[in-house]
Image (tube, rainbow, N blue to C red; front, top):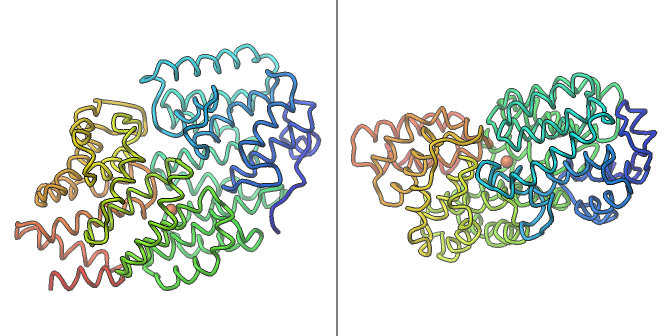
Length: 485
Ligand SMILES: [Fe+2]
């Protein structure tokens, strides 16, 4: 089964138990097109891609304030943040970029507050005509805007109790748990609804297999993760997110040769999921790093990851770029060229004082610490970290020490790096992202411990390398091991 184009009209949505509250079949079908592209991480050229689909959706419903229009507006908030280039302007788009793109918050931006209030007023004025499901959707997005991500996700979970096949609620719950660093919840949210999907088999069921598979992978249930990812791929070979789960499984288990074979043999399919393609190429680069093949990793950076990050301008792609360059820098500094740093700096420099997400902040600092053009920016970033923020930050006990560790590594203060990272390593899950993404800190810690002058740190390095060997017996781990024997 490939890309579907038989979009659900009003009756089809209602038959699934998800009435949209509009009589516009065109708007209902376009809502389906949008949610399908969102869940599948792709632009469908038949409908002009996600942005065009959204624009058509808006014009399809002449009554701006009707039910589906409000949901659509809020969906646009989400789409914008994840997929759309930051140069694209537009009132709701811009609000969404800041909101879900974790760049700013309503507490730090007056214009953000203005947009929030406009959406809130829209909800209040339509309250009488909205269903409880629609009200919960709107309230959830507004809660997220206020930095209350865990409260927002509770509302999406509340929707799923009564409407388990509401893919909109399920997808946003998945994203929330990923940001919050809650993999158990990520896995279980999908497990709870899967029986309803399998009983009804509504459109997009295969994507739910993919969502579940990633939750399983992040909770170390690798066999089951692979099983569900392959179920998803059997129905839709181009599913870039299910592919991504398998990429993670191979990485986590140190099955590098299998990972490269799988990703290379399926690249023509998973590149169709154009919004996760850069990230999947990043995973390929990580295999090369584990193989100590820095030339190949550098080629993936220069030919895939960096160009895609520059073209798309999405947060995920920017962070992948800085993360990859930083890994190369830690493990094989000569493989990093000065233009790599400058490109990473160019992508990151406008975010030096954002401080919306600890995860984002540490990746921006990786770029700043390496770039020759970042004079003053490193200090500016360190000094501007606020005392508190939303739920996606822990500035006092995570952001600040992690930023300092990156600066200390640059300054070759390796004992200080160990002193910061070692006590924090089991708390890093709180910054969100995946095990593979956070592994950059394990690598930093091992290299810092190896380079530290403290004899105690040599013992720690040996212990950490043994620990890594238990799951990742790769050429990189073997090189580490040779350094401590
Ligand atoms: Fe990943």
